[in-house]
Image 1 (cartoon, rainbow, N blue to C red):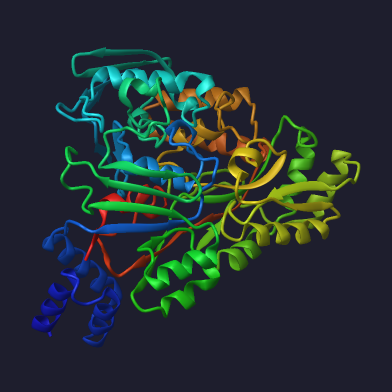
Image 2 (cartoon, one colour):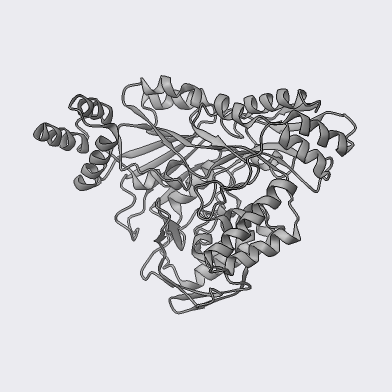
Length: 528
């Protein structure tokens, strides 16, 4: 059996046998699926990446209004595009450790208020210029400008001084932050020549691929950057990202071989796709969550009693079962789950409670007019159906919820972060501080619930510099309670990242940080 298994592993690693066929043969030999997967991953790594070819992705989350400016990336396609042409100071590995990219060393003062990033020498931008410490500082400065509308605004606002000296970047913080390297891994912070001030949407970075086609809402083309500094990444000669927002069309493209990978699989079709030859399902639990967001500084959601009524009027368990098909778990109206360090699992789980919902709704004094909930098919997989379930459960509580279905194109530019009440999603972040800083700090540009809470802000700043893990966990717990009980976010469920992947793709690694290997599947994988 050992000889036969070794033979099969070698053939599969070289792409002569499909992964599906190997798993079937291994099972027939009495090898468990878990062990077979581990053995195959080791064999693929030992065989080494193959170079060349064209990797195609079919993705939901793209619009005609998208820009190549990384500051504005607000959905999956712009994020994936940025990871293809861009590089950051650091990234985060699947195991949660820091991956040094343009910065080859990172160090801090004992009080975590001064951080130094040593910039890797000899790295080139696509325009032939060398990446310098000055480019890094200018990039960070651009994101501090509120006019940039950067999704990283809340992160960089905590920096009081930026200095470039030779190959060293020194960042001095207003308040201590032990997690600063994780914040620098935010995908908006792609380092650009001169910071991108001249043309932030030029698509010129230091990443593995140069952009050759830019058709927002349609497709993006890339070719290998010959002078890329890291030969462990960027195995294909070309990459193409096709925007396919319709779930049925996206799945059909994978089944027909038009694309090699797709994101945001609808759980309802997974069993069907499993029967398709040459296709596998990758389900990765992580920090991603689907949400309904109420803007707390906008009528009628200024009233916390109304917000609480709606939080009790949603049936989370039903939603996980019917929308996620079990590929996820219930949320608790704050954006943190057990995938995060220092998660407090003693916080009481909020349940569907019609009586409490009725009590809060009556207390709110709402006039009984319809409460409009904006949604779109692309808000998250099953968003329209989830809104309809919410409408029915709220109706049983005497709350008049009315669904407004918007088109996918323009949803992230015209509805999200603007409509008083809408469906949305978050991919999560590696650490609690980054998640809260990006979306709940009062001054954050992406504070989509308009959450304004001085106590929360002060706790967030204090937790950054608290090196005692027990005290820091207690602070995060208090922050979770504030968001849960006073905020405008309804978190019915945390979703698994569901991707469809061709057996022609090798090098796949489960990454809980974001979907499609934290946005880097196209640059880390290779063709069999």
